[in-house]
Structure formats: C-alpha cells, structure tokens
Length: 417
Image (cartoon, rainbow, N blue to C red):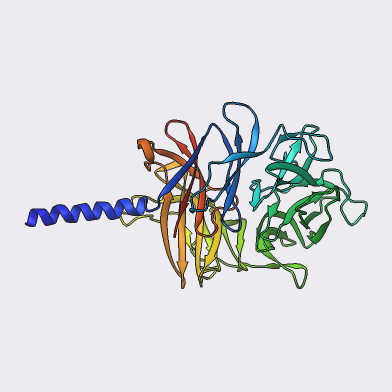
C-alpha cells in the first residue's frame, strides 16, 4: 500500500510540473514556410493577421484567420498580397514592411485587423512607403492608401510625410498611425475608414506632434480608441506617455524610479496600452555590461515601481527555468484582473524565445509558460521557439508563431480562460 502511495505521489508531482509548463491547449492552424511578422490579434479577439509567404511561392501576403461560430479559428488565408494593385495608385506592393531610415519611427511593424478591415504599412514597387487599409467587400479584399511618403500632411502646410510606423486598426473602425515628417517632426494621426469606398479621400485628424520638449516618438500602442507610446523629453530620458483626449496632449505614465532592477543605465521599451493602463519592458545595464530586464505595469492594482517579472524569475517551483531577457509585453484586463503575455529567453537557451503569461490580481503576480522551447505538440514535434506579434492577447486568446524542430513554422492559438 505504501509503495502504491509513493508511486501515486510521484505521478502527481510530475503531473503538476508538466501542467505548469504545458497548461494550455495549443490549437495548430497552419504550417507556413516563412513567417515574417507573428500574429497580431484584433481588439475584439475574433480575428488575427500576420505576414508570410504563400505556399512554396515567393509571393508575400498578409494572412487572416477568423473565429468560427464554435470558438475555434479558421485556417489562415491570404488577404493582401504583393500581386495586389493599390486602388487609385496603379502600383503593387513590394513588401509589407517600411524600410527604416535615419528618422523613421521604429517599432513592431505588424499589420492589425478589426472585423473586415486590415491596417498595415508597406512599400510599393516604386519604393514609396505608406500606410494602407484593406477592406473585404462581396468576398474580395481590396487595398487603399491612407497616407503616402511625399504627400502633404492634411493640414495643407508645407510639410510632407517622410516615413511611417505600422498603423493600428481600432474597435470603432478607425486607424491610428505614427509618422515622421521631412522636418524631423513626429506626428500621430487618426482617421475613420469608410466601409464602402466611392473614391473619396481619407481625412486624417492630427492628434499630437513632437516639439523641443517631447520628441523621438516610438512604438505606439492603441486600444479602445486611445493610444500610448514612448517619447524622449528635453532631459534626454525616455518615458511612457498616454494621450489625454480632453487636453490633447501626452501625459507621462511612469515613475521616476524603479525597484527590482540593478542600478545602471535604464532603457525603456515600447508600451502596451489597455483600459487606461500600460505595461512595458525596462532594461538596466551596469558598468560591466551586464543587462537585467523587467516588465512593469500599473494594472491589476500593481504599482509601476514593483516589477511584474524580472530576469532570473523562476517559471516553475523546481527553479529549473530562469528567464534572462524579457520583451514585447501585451496587456489585457478583464474583471479587474490583468494579463500580460510576453516573450522571454531562458538562461539555459539564450538564442530562442518562448511565450509566457503573467497574471496580476490585487497586486499578486503569477507567471506561467504558454509555449516554450522543448515543449511537445501533436505528432511528437517539438517547439524550437515561439513568438507573439504586436498585439499578443485579447479576450483571453493568444495567437502565436511557432518554429518547430523539423523546420516548419506553425501558426497556432491558445485560450487562457
């Protein structure tokens, strides 16, 4: 009897350890030869998009997957391709990523989607950059320009668009995008997307612009019609800012000091914005070049100065998995509980990333693995690395791009509740 109990106890311990590492069912949707930008999910959690290659061809496409009536997701299909001609421009796409220049706003240049509207940045065959939207009508996708490199800004001043960051499609059929002008001013614009195109021009409304006191806009994050981003102040330091609609200005949303990170040169990553709260990564490098990382948020009754997760954080009770590098957090809030999905690199395997989830409730944090190197999927295939896109979680759904040990790239989703 005692031997049976001991065996049962060992089985339970192993089961608990396995569940902590593989606690979420992963639904595999498609195999892709190449995935260029991992999936970004819509604000309502019912569709996602990513960029990749169609089959064994060299044709680049933005793929889309929608939630079925039973809660599963459809196999991703191409929506916008490099063979598509932009309406009104008589030009095809060269790529769906803008080519960065010295004054190009940088960030995670991923397309985004809401219902049957896709917003994305791209470069045409004539090498002009722009921000675009695609809309599905009568079962067919068509692409239209929003703003193009070299165009005058809507205010009709003698200023011209120079470069763009990826636009965000909001839940109310608007597109918000970050751009730089030829005089090095950074601007944020918002425009409403018509559901039925009749040749009219898109009118973009200026939200904010950089000046001598606030500049170098970087990595915008959009949710519920509002946005946050990183910007540099006249002191030379970068902070996270949230746009105040009433005052029409950017407001700092972070403390002056942090706990949980060693003293050193701080570098603030781009934010994730949701329901008036933000989450973002911070790194600190000491005099010897050692870099430590942490993720901070003011959601879930947490305080900015208290990190959600830091370098060296154990992912399971055996302390065998320690995170070294943390980045690309996405914040989601439901019923006063905050969820942050992020990418992390383990000290045991610094060259490949995994996907992790931090849950925060009443200031208490728990961190779990979602999809990590070494994890087995169907057919005994093993995950080599896992990535999320610019928007990693909405309504409990996390879409992922997984690189497998057999060389395949797999698009998959998981649900956390």
